[in-house]
Length: 84
Image (tube, rainbow, N blue to C red; front, side, top):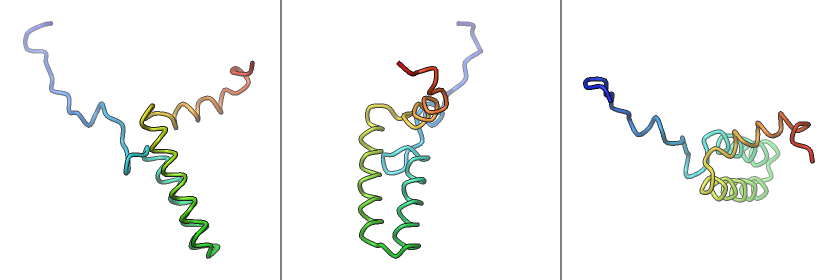
């Protein structure tokens, strides 16, 4: 390493962005869908159940891979290349 060419790297640049343990994109999508069902269709219990189940699943998957949403989007885009 060359002397004088060190830069501090903030921890936030290397960690994933999570909202309550779920990836940010997944948490926003699940919350929006649950709010649309709960508030828009006035199915309060169904919206609440969808939010709890979806957010719990996202937190469970984020524990093993915080970038699972990026991987799922990429695999959906390249589905013909991944077919067995």
